[in-house]
Amino acid sequence: MNFIEELKWRGMLQDMIPGTEEQLQKEMTAGYVGFDPTADSLHVGNLAAIMLLKHFQVCGHKPFALVGGATGMVGDPSGKSAERKFLDENTLRHNQECIKQQLQKFLDFSSGENAAVIVNNYDWFKDISLLDFLRDAGKNITISYMLAKDSVKNRMETGLSFTEFSYQLIQGYDFFHLNEKHNCKLQMGGSDQWGNITTGTELIRRKSDREAFALTGPLITKSDGTKFGKSEGGNIWLDAKKTSPYQFYQFWLNSSDVDALKYIKIFTTKSKEEIDAIAGEHNTDPGQRALQKALAKAVTITVHSEEDYNRAVEASQILFGKATEETLRNLSEQDLLEIFVGVPRSSVAKDKLSQGISVIDFLSEVTKVSASKGEARRSIQGNAIAINKAKVNETKSIDDSDLISDKYILIQTGKKNYHLVVVE
Image (cartoon, rainbow, N blue to C red; front, side, top):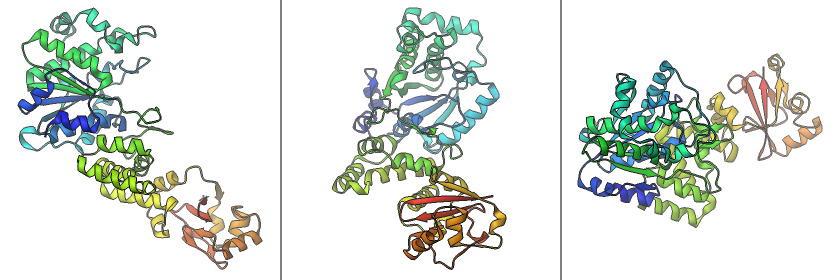
């Protein structure tokens, strides 16, 4: 497969140095993307860079993932308006290990000649003295060259420390090291990394006669112009402990039609024929949201698992489709609370349930869901009340057996009105 052509139809190509496509067509090429270990998880904003490596490997090339243990201590000024806080070495090491585990879900590390490789730039920078680095790298890149970079120019008025100013030189040395030690000829990243990446190609050109190439993909945005990768709660993380599979699934499922078509090309390995077929199905009946469902399924299974995907679908059906009491009881407490975030709540002492409470009293006096016993009775007779997704009659008694996760009872009035009772 032609990697550049693959990126073009997927909308994943922004810039590249002349000769890059010819190099990739000539031979299997080693290329890398860098990841900043400032957190113990990557987020969906990193996914485009991960997919660059994924498609790179699928097209027959050798991917290197560089986890920036050294550069993470410095901080990349690209796209930042202020200096970042430094992390200690133990925290960085922990973050690096977590990121490695996440990358292993996307890349094949045992495929022979083009198996993926993870490297950490701290491993070579820890033994280089400041004077050696200045003599070996600093003398080859001029101040005027570094000042011309957008990542520097954009910070000149608000302030830029020498530490962050030096970042592009350190990243450039990464490329030089990988080029020399691993014959790595290509560096890839987001378009905001173009300045840092080309500093590496320039350093290689000046220090050796070896070939080096650069390629970037566009920064991903939403069709309404807002930033991709964030929700009301902040970043959408790849770690299930930070962003549950349900929240993760919902993030993709809630994409607009325009965004879903763009995202399914970038964030999945589905072929052009598959995507065209899904898009055709979607256009025939947009209400079925075929694009969003296919996108959310593919990415959730890749990042988490098929089991997590199935649970996320079941959880979604509780609010938006047909679901049973068994489905509700199979939810984790975290998923339950995330599904019903924002719905009205009331609290009940657990000892009140020990002898059982009639459903009429439970609705009218305990939770105030119904304004009166008469209203509660009429709602039940009209088949409008469900407790934990099960319709009830007037003889129903609410007791400990109705608890979900040993703490919650869900009342549903009509099709869409929910009330969560917290039993403490």
